[in-house]
Figure 1 (tube, rainbow, N blue to C red):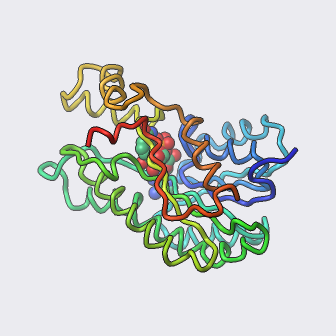
Figure 2 (cartoon, rainbow, N blue to C red; figure 1 turned 90 degrees about the vertical axis):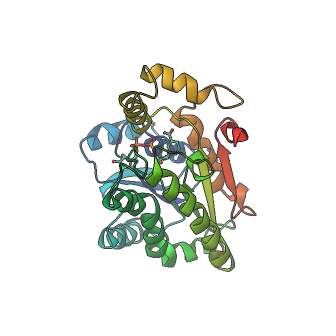
Amino acid sequence: MAGRLNGKVAIVTGAGRDGNIGVAICEAFLREGAKAVIGTDFRQEEAAEISARMARLGVGGAFELVEQDVTSQADWARVADHATSAHGGIDVLVNNAGIAIHSGIEHSSLDDLRKVMAVNHDALFMGMKACLPALKDSVNRFPGGGSIINNLSMASYMPSGINIGYHTSKAAGRMLTLCAAVEFGPMKIRVNSVHPGLTMTPLIREGLADYVKLGRYETVEAAEASIAGLGALGVSSQPEDTAHAFVYLASDEARFVTGASIYHDGAIGQRY
Ligand SMILES: NC(=O)c1ccc[n+]([C@@H]2O[C@H](COP(=O)([O-])OP(=O)(O)OC[C@H]3O[C@@H](n4cnc5c(N)ncnc54)[C@H](O)[C@@H]3O)[C@@H](O)[C@H]2O)c1
């Protein structure tokens, strides 16, 4: 059956936690005919469960969850080499892994800021650099060329007084994406970003619980309703919804799209 990603090889970071966006992207890519999807994460506790879920899809594409710390250049070299030697190249890189430390400048240390920047920003640079040689070859297989998709956030364009590292790193990720789009365009590699709004995953549930601890909301449910209510649609997203945006950007349907931001946020940004 013709899929939108038939024959492509993809790396998706942050895919080691069931119920998260990375796992949903891997699943969507496999459903669309990807030849191989390499999920990576430093968490491996749920590897068997996630691999079993992908096997149950009954599609032909290979899936593996590879251990990787996205802040390690050595790990990036290993993952890029593995994709090329085991699967013949890299067509799509999704920089999806992310972390948050919920506090403002007053109660954050410089180390807190650096930790968040390392995962949410520096790792994007490392991933793009490590995968670049392989991505250059993608155009010889697919007319749309290589595709890099950075998972940023509505946080990249909305300020926050209680989440300094997260918002700053995501905003910096947007400029990194734009610069890479300009640099890599002549190499036929497209670079785009997706900016999810409130998407109900383990990360966001933990984040909402932190807001409750900080006294901003009474309960996690109240926090979800309040934040989702800021958007025009008034509801939160599910990881499977968010994954569709990545399928489009990874596919050759988006062959003329680079340097673009998909605001997958229910128009929450309209308030700012
Ligand atoms: N859920 C939302 O509402 C939302 C909104 C906007 C943006 N995002 C972004 O989407 C991405 C995925 O978020 P999620 O909600 O699925 O979160 P999640 O915590 O469920 O998933 C993030 C994954 O990244 C992994 N990770 C963290 N640090 C790592 C490291 N150093 N090396 C390797 N893996 C690492 C974690 O183990 C985890 O599996 C993040 O970049 C996040 O900022 C999420």
